[in-house]
Length: 521
Image 1 (cartoon, one colour):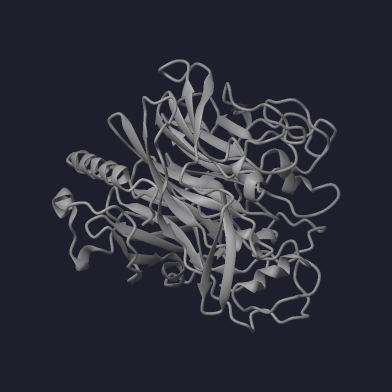
Image 2: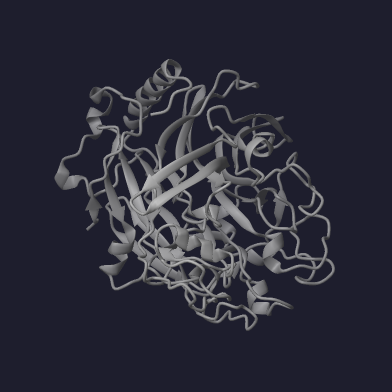
């Protein structure tokens, strides 16, 4: 049974109730997910002044310079680079009849009802991506089997994968959460991503495929850390010991690095080359992105041959991971000016949208990033077997590099939008409406991951090669003490009449957008 908390925010353009009459639900049935609705993962800082005491020793090193009060507590990242605090995982469900978030599913409470801890690390900006299962019956995400208000969990070791050089000595499992259409929750604990965090997971053919990063120690990494990163898989409800997906070329930590089909880079830690962040499935093929880390290549990757998703788990060690033709191949150590890809959405076989979180700079330097925002890539062949090229980057309306402030009961914070992270989309004929979560930079806090960020939307013409006149609308700005993380549709549309309803909705959105270009709601 879902835990539902009223939370009213006007998020979507006003559409007539008749557009959604087929999907109206009574309060009694609202606990189940509505196919096609929009979900946004969110978390709220839940610590108090006593959660951290000034002068106390921190798990990742150093002593606390701020108490647990919101949100200055995250200034403790200065003495402790591993600093973080776990908090509840919340999913806001957009009610398309009232055009507002009228209930929140408290995933952490649902897990607690089963005697399970399941939380996120509040300031870890790369977490809580949402992915619809390939059968359209569930939404998946990653968290930690750790209590709320626990310090430095995102850099803890996992069982069986302990790095003695990791300054954070605690041990916690990572976990895949699966929320089904009927509102039930299942949790599969995994021992992947020791020393770092899992970012995303998708359910396909009875298996979970995950992306993340590992390693938080120094010196030569143990083998059980080296093989604990990148793309991992395990059976749904299966073993906590996951299997690495992808041929490992060279020896991790050695002079030829740890690569997936690209030129050798200097000796480094395993997680720097395959610090994967975004994840999507299209046409039975798995894709991922790398947009952070000092080694490897920040670009878009295809995992395995086209159409082979169902056999990846059985052929994990022989699976190739390769850069999509036309995307960046320059090593992160030598690349200048981006890109920094994160979320992915295929509108069709020859149109791919890539969210880019920006260069992490502020002001004019952030706004000058040619990749920051939403990149539209087109393929030279209609079936997607040719070479990809960047058509344009959509950033109008994001106000990249411009400051905004939010005030809460315990303080205020000023930040800037840097780009985009997770995205979701809905195709309607010759147009596509895309929803995205913004990245932040230039915070008055040490950790910009704790900044209130935004949910935005844009409608793009699939036939356009310029993007002229298109602009993002801000649908929601997170409250002070809140962060937004992932976005997805609830599930593959069903029944068949859903397509007609969504068509009307998207047309209504487009009309509303044209009337309100340049304004926020």
